Image (cartoon, rainbow, N blue to C red):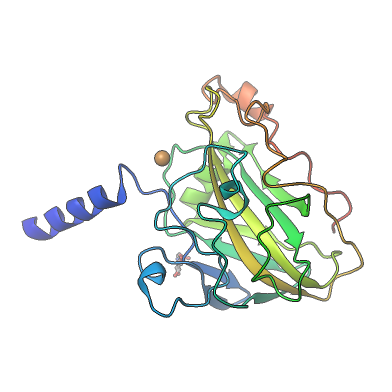
Length: 249
Ligand SMILES: *[C@@H]1O[C@H](CO)[C@@H](O)[C@H](O)[C@H]1NC(C)=O
Ligand SMILES: [Cu+2]
């Protein structure tokens, strides 16, 4: 008993001061689909094909909004070894199943998509131009930050794929933005995760307009923000990246 708790404590130390979280699984309808498991997938040869973009070896955060890591997490330059995507109908949901998320890393949960310009998403980095559009966001609702709600909901967050976007291949960029240190410039922590999706059905909308990097500025009011000023201030919080793209549903 004592030995096993020591082993757990040692493993926790190796991971870091605290574990942030990553997305080892997603769920579409009743189907569980492997995401990117940082404890296994980077160490598997050949590298497994995963619908969640792989990152470098940790689940650490990004603080530099001008870095290409802001697009799809640390090591955005590393593309998947081949084409793979999860199929989802326009108007349906994708559940992001985080392995964990620390309470108190509070902030909004932001969700964007970008249409892959190529026949599949595996060669699309999404880090130049403005291919992205915002599809969903949650900030401070009834006294609770969306990231704390995620942590209290079995580490699950549900993204609705817009019903009116054109069918095709997309990256979904799902992001936790932790504001606990955000009252200083560079103190906000970004945790983006990208999923390769094939959207079926849908309509004729082909939105775009946002860039990662590009859209976020270190001094945006939703990025340079003191989260400890009380509920009234938090309720007035304006997330970065603007409003959800109009007319998606
Ligand atoms: C919590 O999420 C995990 C996957 O991350 C799932 O296997 C489990 O069934 C979920 N538990 C509940 C109570 O929904
Ligand atoms: Cu942290």
